[in-house]
Length: 73
Image (cartoon, rainbow, N blue to C red):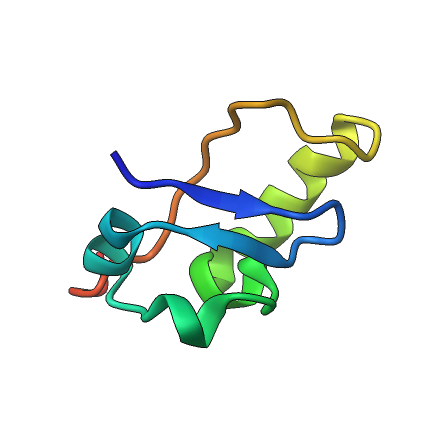
């Protein structure tokens, strides 16, 4: 299972080894960066942000969305 922890302003604060493998990104390069820019395919970004807005500014403990993998899928 991969784990990505986010701050309230979408900054990546946790990125475990499984997330590194799946997304092809190194932890030290993504910590502190914006999750939406790093991990969400451009065509999905607007939808993910709209869904987050519907949650009144707070994400639940478990939130699922599409991410782009190392192989581009």
